[in-house]
Image 1 (cartoon, rainbow, N blue to C red):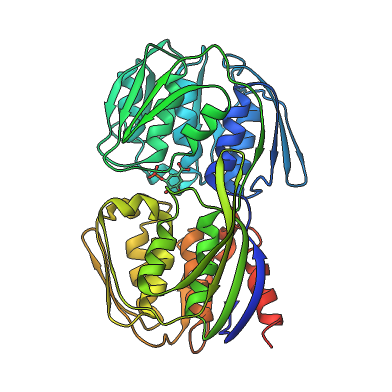
Image 2: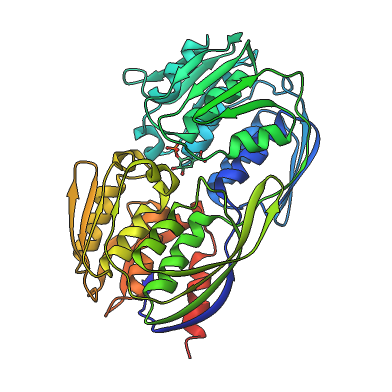
Length: 428
Ligand code: S3P
């Protein structure tokens, strides 16, 4: 994919539905009772993998445009699949489904693509085993394929060593099937879509600071769910609107859950001009419109408890930092090494190739901002967020960028390049 530089942008856009919320809507509806209707579902490859897994567990799921209808039969209605479940590239699917499947009465196997098979699964295997699950991985019980034998579970207290919404959610879902109370302590707050949606569907979930408590209930209720736009997808255009020479982008209907808005806080700290308009609620999630205008940026230090609130946005924050005045230091972000790719190495290597002054550190990176980037040919590492972050860098570069293996954007943002095309066509 060739991305050319662009100077002037005036555009009003919408980004696709939130990936985390779309996954959860299908999963929780599948174990709820009655029909759930999911509006603005993200038709990206990851969320389609979740639908495929639940169809294999014999849940009736219909797709009508951007609408998904799930006819859930209750907490114990899933049936033994005829084949191995395949989550594709989706870490959220494999980790959350492991929690649900641990409490069933049948056995099954789950796998995914090469990237999934490299990612750590011990972080869910360990707590699920403490709850009584019979769950096995390969390579010292840390990698997929996973085998799960259905078992009666019991609630536990778990002190999470890392802030991870996927691990927290996996334990909470297993907790729905466990005897007694499940409680989880997080070191920092990670995204809380599971807590919000499960409660909306009738689960007994209480949040006390960094602790989440879950008591088993007899049933969850199917609901209508409105998925807001994904702030992690909006992030690419927040950065583009800021670093563009002459930019103004309105992004409508974006999810503004406070556990996800670290990107807005950091960009504002760097000097970006972002207006939040029309704030409202969609189902149990806050949302609004974001208006971003170009502005000069300055370097910042990012670390500590904000990291989980912007973990997926760090690749594109690195792009913003490459155009900022001064130095940006990103710390405490070692989790980036075990995402779809090693996102620290990927961004440092590729941004260097197109002219950025950037260094990898143990737990993040240091970026020395410049006025401009040269451009050139870069790799996506088959990682959607790397491809999109580098595309944004290309739009502000001198020569543009050519991205190898750019199809991976379909994981979370299938029409990403169409939006960029439209910006190119409307430039003047
Ligand atoms: C996600 C949680 C995050 C995030 C991922 C999606 C989720 O990972 O990086 O893209 O939907 O729960 P963690 O489990 O590390 O928080």
